[in-house]
Image 1 (cartoon, chains in turn red, orange):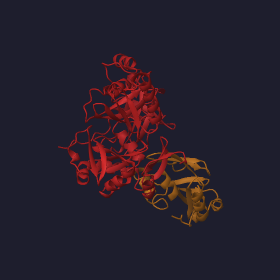
Image 2: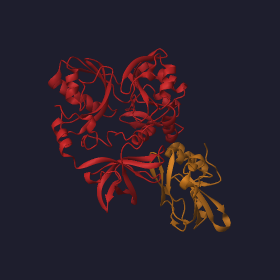
Image 3: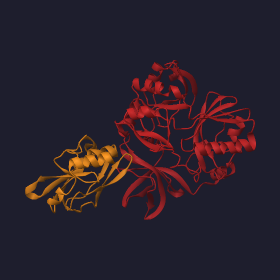
Image 4: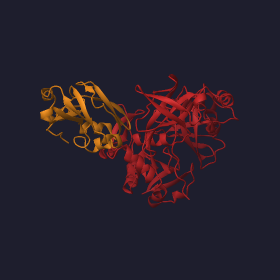
Length: 367
Length: 130
């Protein structure tokens, strides 16, 4: 921790709960609470848990050219997104590398909320401002409200029932990837039916001075405080990429297997490169793999075929939900078929791994 | 939590105590502080029975959900037993690092060398300062 790191409005709450604070993306954030990562993962998979994700950015894009602007800088379409809905997609540089991945919400015909990752917010803001100044000013303006608001992720199979007890509206009726406005104990919330855990859940944007009140309402109702450690295990089990690991400025969404979030039929930043990759294929692709036992693959470890390095691990962990070790990594295109057997070099120890279709974990559908 | 004063400690957060003076047999593990820093432990790579281990040389690895750390031998000796329970229940080290969660037993080459290690008081002062 350094004095230079940003702190969310819940910093003191995390410390008083016994959260272990670490630097992440320029912020001091809890990696875990005293119950530990495994207990936190279990809470999210079986009940409810709550994350402070206020380190993630909150950007409003507004104006008559806001849709046109987002259509240009995003791989997904903004103009065809209905008001009331949200969408996941990528922000690419001119080489087709991923500056960030994001969820954005259409608030009105000419107004959007976009959530960049914590550490990428400065790069996204600079990139957006460049394009606004070059092509879309004065028809599109950007407002960064990250430091005056907070964001809470409330996740787990028990969230619909629990949120209806504490919010003013029946939010359990919301569809996935939609948003609504409501209130918890008098504090206004902007809530999306979204998340990064592979479970059902809600993400809530609140005013900075309401953050502690809304968080406490959720934990008092039984939600387990969860840290970044559990969040990383959960997203990995769900096969979701993390920027800086599976995706970065040198990696394209097509290599990462994110084709379905990339428009094939429009012109936007790097569209020619991405569409050529979609049509012609790429040399390396992201795969998931499993290995027996609990020793985990870690980022940077090599994947080999008959002694020859053919890939690199981007993320890995012991998966408590599946009780086996799992990983993701890039391999040469001919090794992507599920069932392919490869060797993993765990600090000099060779272990056999099996390429597996992603995601590793899919939540049970409830009827 | 203060460390038990019936044993000795290293700066690498291992503990060791003689459990049978007649045979120079000692038992060793990692400290409460070490397991707390690691978080949920999921895997151990331990030396095998018969392996020679050397004071402050790597003797194995411990993995938690978030990290991998080397284990260092507190003494010179020969491994006589490893805690097989940790294969299926590595969490024993989180739950009871000074008891059920011991790692190995070894015949120590020189029992007097154990006395050179840190006392519980010194170790607790060391971790409080780090």
